[in-house]
Each structure stands twice: as structure tokens, then as C-alpha cells.
Image (cartoon, rainbow over all chains, first blue to last red; front, top):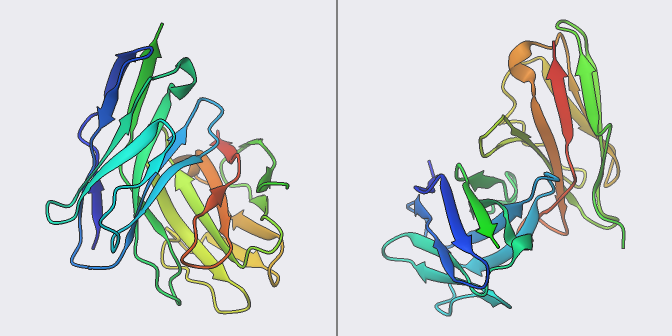
Amino acid sequence: AQTVTQSQPEMSVQEAETVTLSCTYDTSESNYYLFWYKQPPSRQMILVIRQEAYKQQNATENRFSVNFQKAAKSFSLKISDSQLGDTAMYFCAFMKPLYNQGGKLIFGQGTELSVKP
Amino acid sequence: GAGVSQSPSNKVTEKGKDVELRCDPISGHTALYWYRQRLGQGLEFLIYFQGNSAPDKSGLPSDRFSAERTGESVSTLTIQRTQQEDSAVYLCASSLGYTDTQYFGPGTRLTVL
């Protein structure tokens, strides 16, 4: 069974600085998807970034980028120029889609990020 | 366009009562998922619907939990004879297809007294 581990329960960063959140996963699959979601206090889960395992290029979305190391099974999230609105719980998630089982997400335990002014 | 909506936003119930939670997916999304999030935890998969196919119920924790979906529309998650350990936020997500990104609703916070 696949597992996702986020080893940093809490992190903090000063506004405008850069922070990196760690995620490792365990799978024997070769084709899969990885995600970062953020969950602010409103509890709405918001997609931050998505990475297909078959793509070697790291995904980026504005200030958010990932470092995807397939052999090491590592998928870290870098947030540049941190903003107060980035304060949230961040979840790393793994997906191996199968037609009869869908694309159920397997989540890590989360990293609570605080951006300080 | 409208996102995924869920109702009620909050539900407080007494142990032993039945509760019904509702999810309205994004229009046109064929896949729908239910997840449970206990306090301070990540999300746990409960059930998956894809069009008119038989649902994947492998994540349901007990036979007190059931869910229905008619076609590609609304879904309801029912918990019978609620227990205190059922207290959690229940999140619904939908996606265009089973390989696509899931978009989440705001969740229902269930508190069982």
C-alpha cells in the first residue's frame, strides 16, 4: 500500500522569504500523480500544484514550485516570496488512478505553515 | 462557475442518531469522492462514484456508513447510529474524470455528543 509522509508538523517563515516543505512517499508504481493542497482555517482544500510522475520537469505555479525526485520518492514544495495569505495547513497527496477505484488521494499528515509579518 | 457545495456546514447530533450529509459536485464532473478528516489529521478516503458504475466502497469504516449518488448529480453520505468517534469534517470532492484533479467542497463538520 502507498504511504505519504510529511515529517514537519509545523513550520514558520518570515513574509517575503522562501520556505520548503518536505514530502516523501512509498510506492511500487511507476505511473502516478502527486499533489500539494493547502487548507486555510476556512477548511476549504485548495489545489496548489500537481505533478505527473512521467514528467521529468518540475511543476511550477507562480510562487510555488516542486522538487520532484522520483528515484528518491521525494516531492518537496517551495514557496517563494511568502505572503501572509499562505498561512495554512499544507497536505501532500499521492494518486494512482484506476478505473474501478478512481483517483482516490492518499494524504500525508500535513504541515502547518505560519507566515509571520 | 460554481464549485463543489456541501450542506449542512455544521451538524451537531446526539449519539445514536442518524445523519445525512449532502454534496453537490461541479456540473459535468463524473467522478465524486467522500473523505473524512479527523481533528489534526490528513484526509481518509471513504467512497468513490464514477458515473453509473458500481461505487468503490473500500474506505467506508463500518456498515453504519453508506452513500448514494444518482447519475452524475448530488450525493448523500448517511451515518446511522452515530458514535462519538464519527466526529470529524466530511469533505466531498469531484473531478471531470478519474485521472483528473479533484476539487473540494468546504466540508461538513459533524459533532457527535
